[in-house]
Length: 127
Image (cartoon, rainbow, N blue to C red; front, side, top):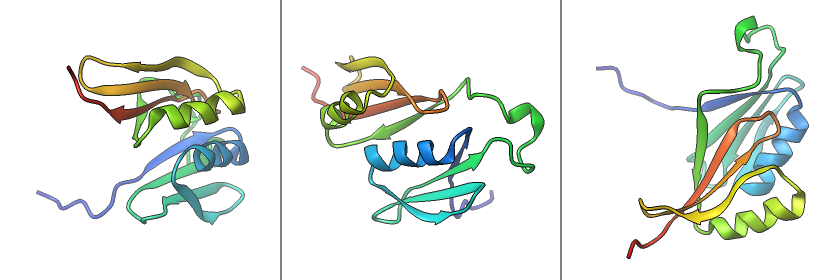
């Protein structure tokens, strides 16, 4: 079996600046590298990475330059309600306000600037 040395999600974006602002405002991510076609975000503890790439860049095959579908990204945070306050104040698109789930998460669903479904969750105790 092959050892994984690193894993990173890359999001295809129609507006790099808007996507960068979205992810850095809501999460513990800062810009590690930025160019006119790619932005690399990394958590302050250097453990998590997120890439944002211009969807029209030549390295993205034509069939994958569309809005995302069939997946979502989950961010596990300490307090989903704190994030929700930022989301509301910024007027970001909310799919579902924070709710408690049967499986022990408080969950907020929203869209990122390019339409990807974003699940922001915090662990809760189930009674």
